[in-house]
Structures are given as C-alpha cells and as structure tokens.
Amino acid sequence: MPDNSRDLALVFAGGNAVGAYHAGTYEALHGHGLRPDWFVGASIGAVTAAIVAGSAPEDRVAKLQTFWDEATQATGPSPTGLLKPRQVYNGLHALLSLVGGRPTIFGHRFPGPWSALPWVPNDVALFDNRPLLRTLERLVDFGRLNRGDTRLTVGCVDVETGEEVYFDTARQEVRPEHVLASTAILPAFPPVEIDGRVLCDAGYTNNLPLDPLFATEPERDLLCIASDLFSLRAPRPASLDAVLERANDLIFASPPRRAIAGLRREYELRERLDPTGPAVTLLHLVYQAGADELAAKSFDFSPSSIRDRWAAGGRDALRGLALLPPGGQANSRFHYLALPDGVGPSSASTPQAASVAA
Image (cartoon, rainbow, N blue to C red; front, side):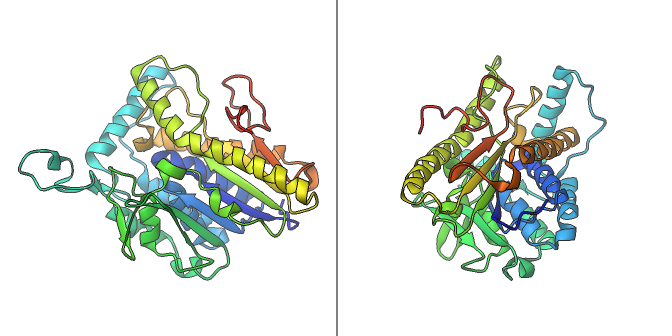
C-alpha cells in the first residue's frame, strides 16, 4: 500500500540481460500501489529507470514488457529442467548474442574486434550501441521525464579522470545519450562524448549507485529499495566457467557492500547528534543466479532466462515488502533489510559478507 509518510526511491544496478530482474521487481512494487519519487540507475538500471520515469504510470509495466520482448532472443523451444541441457541452452544464446547482437540493443561495428589485427585501423569497442539509442527514443517520453513529476538520476564514469558523473532531472535535462553513456561498458560498447567529456558505464566503479540519494541528508523519512543484480555470496565454484562467473560477480557486488557499510557508520553518527532526524530504510534485493547461469549471463537473452529473472524480481520484491516494519517505523535512523540468500548463514539485517565492516 502507498505510504505518504516518507519518500520512496528505487535504485537499479547494471547487468545487461540480467536486468530483467528489475522489471519483475518494479512490476510487483507497482502492483502494490508504490509510486517512487526518485529513480536512480546505472547501465541497464538506467534504461529501466528511464523507461519507467518517462512513461505514464499505467503504461510503465507494458513498456518494460515491450523492451524485454524485443530484446529476447527466441531461437526454439526451451530445454528440460535438467541442469546440463539448460546450461548449454543458456550458453548458446549468450554466444549467439555475441555473434549476432540484439537488434534493439546492440549490433556489430567495424573494425571492432578486427582492429586487433595488423594494418587494421584502431577501434575502441566491439559492438555498436546505436540501436539502443533508437529504442530509448521510441520507448521513453523524454518530455515527461524532464517535467519533474518523477526524479531520475543516471550514473556514468568519466573515462579520462575516473570521476563518477551523474545526470539528474532535478538539475538538468536528461537526454537519450545520457542513458546511452550509462550503458557503455568498456570494451563492449564505445564511450559516449557529452559536453566534451568521454563517458562510459559506471559498473566497474559503482554498479549500484546509492551515492546520489545520500549526498545530502534526506529531508523526510526515506524508503530506498535497491535492486541489485550480482550477489557477494554463492556456492563454491566447481568449474572454470563458475570461477569466471564468481569473479565477475565479486567485481560488481563489492562496491555496494562498502557503500552500505559506510552508510551504517554515517547514520550511527547522525543518530548520536540528532536521534529524531529523518530515518532511512534500505531494502536490498539481490538477484541470486541459479545453477544454470553461466559467466556470460549478461549476454544471455534467451526466453527462459529472461522469464526466470523477471519472475525472481517479482518474488523477491514481494518477500522484501513483507520485511518492512508495520507503519514504516524503525528503531534506528538507518535500517538495513535484505532477504536470506539461501547459500549459508546470514542475517537479514546485515549487508552480505560485510560482518567485519562497520
């Protein structure tokens, strides 16, 4: 049910094809009547946030469905529920995406990978992301987006300085190329030059961009729901592919852990100075990849994988809402909530694997 006693913000992480999880998360929240005041996103999270913020409330879920229907790579019937056939199915779809691209998101560029050969001109990316620009222009009403009804913040990184750069409708007009820059993960996609700055995907530095929300102290109580796509915790890897997947997950999942630990310390100090100040509840939803997922899951646009991730987002959102205290009342100024991950002993009130960081 809507809660007008506090602000609501949604933060969406990056992860390319894994981002179907965000769509399921938003659909469940929307079904419960939750209408965020502020969206923050990086990479596919920025795309999700732009589609939602740039659409009428009654059209948002349908627009997300259109985006993922068009992105999905339908090549034949889904495999059985057996692990190995499903892994092969997922792997083939990831390979086909890398070979053939996705018409509404990315395609090949020349010279691209051929630039590694002698006497071939240099290039800075493997794929052409201009198809995504056209998709954004078609699915997002940027006029609505910039009118200020719902705030949007998009995260990027300056390639030359390493500085995080945020485009925010509260301060400037956000255009399709800003969202495109947020998705330009190197070296897959070329960086985007905007106002003299060369920008790329924020994934390597801040894949779950919580920072803009907490750059200043909120004026009211705040519920922040963070939809994350990579987990710090997973079973012990037993294959080379599983090791590669684990390494990739740790790269993208570690910055949020440190950010949340920092917020804990900050709000412990705030509470000492002003125990009655605005309170923050952070509900952290994290996609738990199944055993069938591979290291190349970010390029797996197979129908089964997209459907499973969407469903997982919906389930996790509903389970997460059930964790919220009645009436929105917490016993401290910073309240962290997360779902048990099913991997091993953990606490729903402690950031994943962050027990020593506080």
